Amino acid sequence: MHRAFEKFGKIVSAKVSLDRHHKTKGFGYIQFETAEQAKKAISEMNGTTIPSGEVLSVTEYRPSEKLNSRHGSNFTNLYVKNFPRPEFDENNLMEVFSKYGEIDSAVVMRDTNQQSKGFGFVSFKDPSCA
Image (cartoon, rainbow, N blue to C red):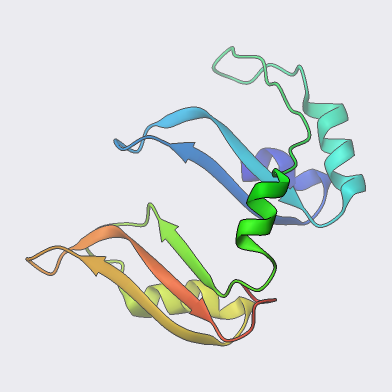
């Protein structure tokens, strides 16, 4: 998804929604750096056919006011999932996210055998980095 949309501008975040078996649910979200980039992506990608033969439906998404008020703009913690098991550790998590700012802590959740569960948390010092 990232490769298909990066031609329209800088992607701030991209997420394909996955089920508990790590299979795509058939939708995802992309946040561009500017509204103009997003509008161009919608204009050019909506209705296009992808290699699987499915037709893309690309539309604008705005979180509800309830969601915005619940999270606000001062959050510093990220929930991160779908990384490799068991080799992906806290050092890898720090490496991936440190380019966005100073990290307060990073943790990979582990099972009773100390194997990664495939998700973890990153806490930034500054909300703007999160």
